Length: 95
Image (cartoon, rainbow, N blue to C red):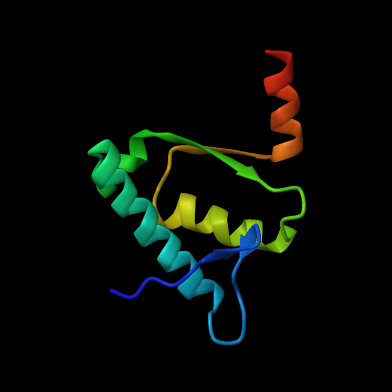
């Protein structure tokens, strides 16, 4: 298995040699391996969980669709909450 660098400079690392599909597949491989290694969670059990996706403020907006397709469509999370890091930092300051 070859895993490249799917995220660079706070954004998906999509270029001429590295397509969005390849980038999302690498992200899926990394997430599934991390879940299995650190949480003892198999890929088929992900459907029982919710996901919070915190995006950098300068994240390319049309790349969000690729991430949502990965998390909802391919991995099958139950629900996803998407927000920017500046807004989430404001919530943290209020707590």
